[in-house]
Length: 139
Image 1 (cartoon, rainbow, N blue to C red):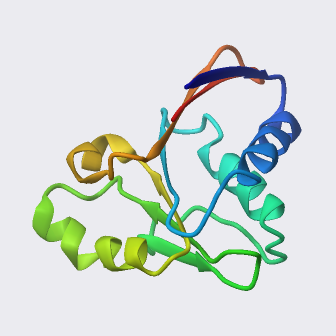
Image 2 (cartoon, one colour):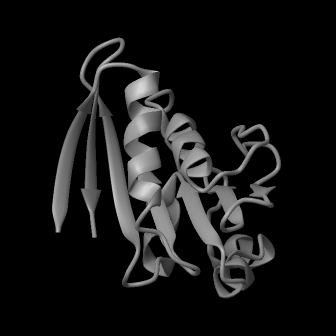
């Protein structure tokens, strides 16, 4: 199944992701693809809002993984930008997080495509202009 959406602003991106969160179940994996600054972290904010997480959602660039606990489902938000091989990926605890029964969301999923589960929800965000984004969801 493929769905396309044009976001006119950050609020639209958050709202669209919030609606997607309604279909998530324990063990869901969402892989985000897109250039720097296209709104991947805003998309995660929308997922978190939809799952009723009340804290801050920030890019996990320097932490590799941020945990958002206490909503309907726990969220594990990864930044795979600096992951260059299987050893790096194993060291993040990625596979253990998938087995924890929360929602795993990966930014820079291009770097770990071979490790994504078959039922991963793939989200590609592309810049149309300074504020507009095209979001494609493939299930």
